[in-house]
Length: 72
Image (cartoon, rainbow, N blue to C red; front, side, top):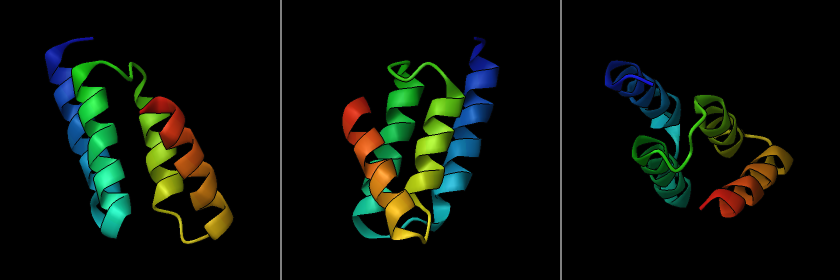
């Protein structure tokens, strides 16, 4: 993947996680860091976890935390 594409994707992921609060914000930032370092190779993986973490539904958020724990 080109650097330009990865940079654009990082901006997109940052936008997705911009409404996160508290400890979820730290998790979102860590996911973005893992993606930028190439430890998470697919943007869709990072995107799905961020969307779950920032969800207002407690069950979905809990699912996102489990996925985050597996990836980090």
